[in-house]
Amino acid sequence: MNIYRPAGFWIRLGAVVLDYLITSVPLAIIFMLATGKDPNESTMISIILTLYAILLPVYWNGYVIGKKICGIRIVKKDGTQVGFLTMILRVLVGGLIYGVTFGIGVIVSAFMVGMREDKRSIHDFVAGTYVTYALPDESIEKSE
Image (cartoon, rainbow, N blue to C red; front, side, top):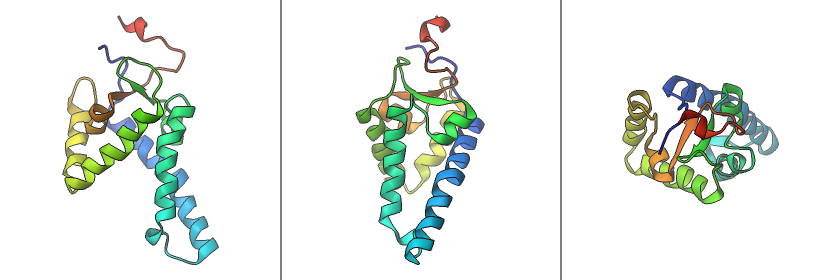
């Protein structure tokens, strides 16, 4: 396995913050205006955001909106495009691990991304993925 141009902690954090601001905040505001209910009590918003995190990278070359803006994307360890099962493992199983550990897994993952040479976190190991600066048409073989 040859990890090609891995993305580090700060760029990944920036992508997550951008993604939150661009997707979650407007969705919560729209929900609140449309229903008059507190968006924090809505499972519908959670379902929409989970589907977004699973499906968009599968159909958009590993990008979600925040990652696209930052120029990073999710790929499999071999550099190929992520699939539906890969993203289910990354989002749902990774999220389950973070929940079961009461957030300690998130802190460990942050240190892993910051300190490991391959910049892979717990959910990357679960799904067999990593986050890279490589463009979709950029060959992984260029790094060998």
